[in-house]
Image 1 (cartoon, rainbow, N blue to C red):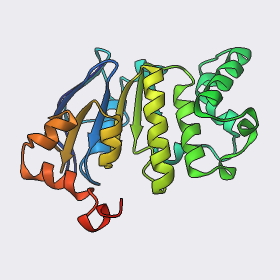
Image 2: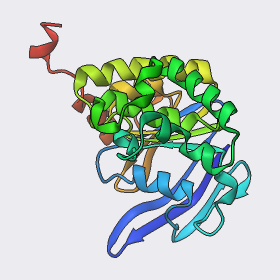
Image 3: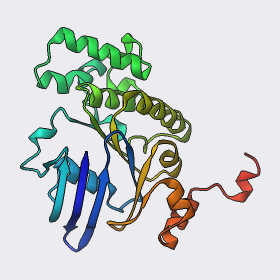
Image 4: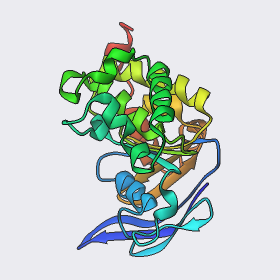
Length: 248
């Protein structure tokens, strides 16, 4: 589904991506894991053709992707960002319909699709008339997911979709995404720095540091056979300390 081959990207003296290669197999959930500045979001934007790589190649469904050659991604890729990236002057329904309206989908067919997606994320139809400012952070994120799914793309790219949420809402939405991904049977590439999210959602993990791939594999691979000390250090950094675990 996605093939990244020896991709590099610099911004002046800063190396954002350093000879990155990976494969995302159809039907899998692949997590790009790493701390802030590790290159996760830059890699996602290169895959989307929003940013040009300095060298290397990206293929999506076998076709090369660059900023000048990304038309084939339209309708084939759903993209979700933090807070949903919603237009404040449009209602929930207006935000969700927008990509499909741009593709000329018939209004009656589109209204049916929007209602289906509302049911999928647990919204009643009255929610479709609200504006983004009237929604909670978790609700806005659900709207962003609905919009990404409205054209029923085979591939979903999510860039820290839960990063701005408080811990309780985040945990609820992590469980919700786990349920949805199981139902939707999509190929998913998810950017996160959250280890819990990675364990819950990811079938394959690529851990990045300073723009390079440190290790790829399952979570068990990273936890049991770390490629270098940083892998263990990163995973343990989000483990509750013994003083807290005693109360859990």
